Length: 94
Image 1 (cartoon, rainbow, N blue to C red):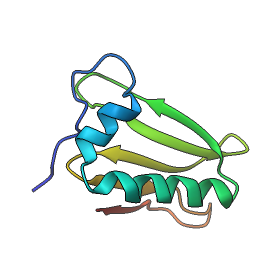
Image 2: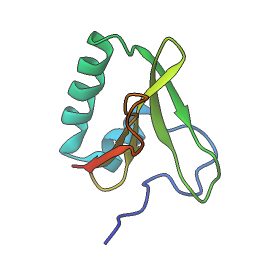
Image 3: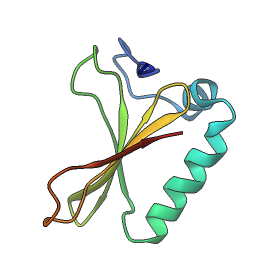
């Protein structure tokens, strides 16, 4: 069963306080992961929402290339952009 995005119908990007409330115990892991990814060179961060029905996801980029999307949904889901030679994204959840 998929857990829906925590910020469906929200029209403004989530604040750190809202993200903390949505993630609960996973908030610390989220921050550690974002920090680690930034240390690896993907330091550009931007919250994206393509539609209020989809909710919000944090996009991490390196040199304008999407590396990973993190979506808060009960814990969080991640979509990792594979190398150009791979065709399918790598998905996982926590």
